[in-house]
Length: 156
Image (cartoon, rainbow, N blue to C red; front, top):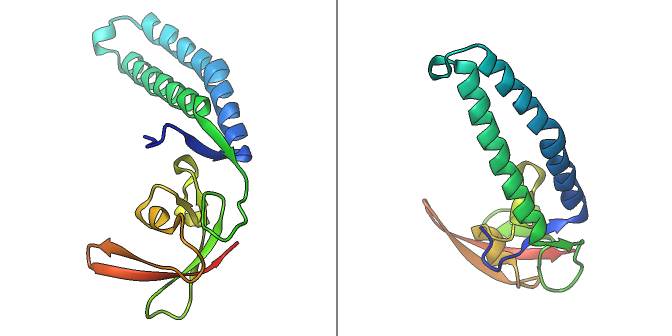
């Protein structure tokens, strides 16, 4: 979960989670209740696949509701951070030693990380190494194939 008890979110992600929570509570729960009623009407619950599927769906939905509520209750809204030191909200360009081109990452909270969108969690090994560093600083990451040295090229 969260080491410091907080979940760092952008305002957009916070709002998206509120919408998801509302949908789960007010739409999905009703759908599941209807499915359970229908499945019960089919008879013998011990061999009723529809009933067992609806119960599993209910359990996973309730788990997601609880997860979202916990995230929202511990949320800290962050905006783009512009400073000399990398932090949550920073856009950081890093370059692997020996390579010509750098990679650009937006440092975000764990809930928003998405490598396809170059959104790097501040709790990932690379994210943890970047946070607190300044332009020109280097850091080392241990991988399965050895250690890799990166240099921070830019922070926006």
